[in-house]
Image 1: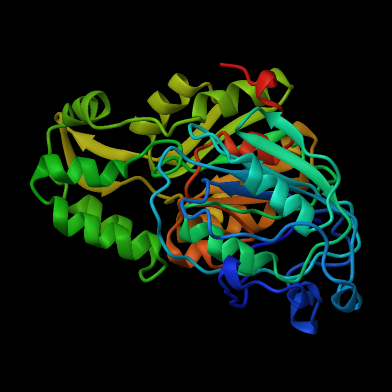
Image 2 (image 1 turned 120 degrees about the vertical axis):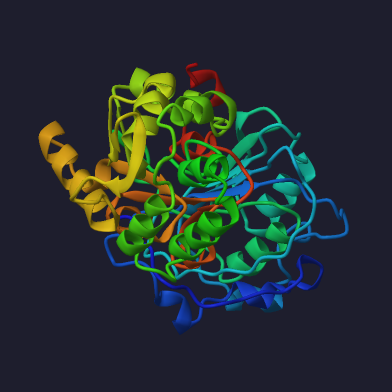
Length: 387
């Protein structure tokens, strides 16, 4: 079983102050994975802006080596176009004995090879294996160190993502994706609201709903009600003028499809949008809510039943059963509270640029990279990407 979404405990320490004793594993690190977990993937996005931050060179001194306990593994790191600093802190539980990969990725920004080499050396890794020159690298390590989340937090401060997941079965057979702020860069209902003159009010409700502060269904009904009497033709204008695709989406879907994978778009948004987005990006199918209209104008209501958190979980079960695969064969991606169910059920659940309530509960987080991170997480080399 893959790592599941669950609330982790905190940890932080500047890379410039890390000590080798931090590599020892404590009892608190046992949380987050079960005994069937078979590996780890670590993904980092961004390169360090402050070259003074360092994991150290060479191996730890002999008197500290007894503090270290090892699992077999590998690692991976991902860097985004923007490398401005921004603080963040997270931890996850320890991995059961396994053979994990650590991946380093930096799309759009050359990944500093010294960072990868320092990390490899500090964690006793094997030779670097670049999945994409200057962009993605992985190497074997003899353990999953206790201080990996201290390192992660400091990398986040430099807009660098680091993700850990099991290595066995990392290549998935199905993509299940949210749409708003995941496959597209906007929230479609907020864009409609802006056209209706109620943008700020709806955007605030959306923010609270995606953070899990409001019941999703009630919040959707309230927001749709504010769109009453809006010209239905506005939908086409919003699609043409306001909606942009998340970078890396086409490559993600095309590459998985070329490898025999299935792609499904499941959104708490609206079919008027998912239909066009699914067609443009190459999804096999899509599910969403239906805005009701009469006489060319929105009625201010949505068809029942409303597709929310449980409907996304149901979609995962129904589609995998139809395809003859298991939930563990799925990589799911989303950003809101209503995505947590499917992220936790999927073999790999990725919180992409996620709301705080999601980011703090999921093991796999991509805060700065784009959707190609999901390909590196699965072990694809860049020359294997399709467009």
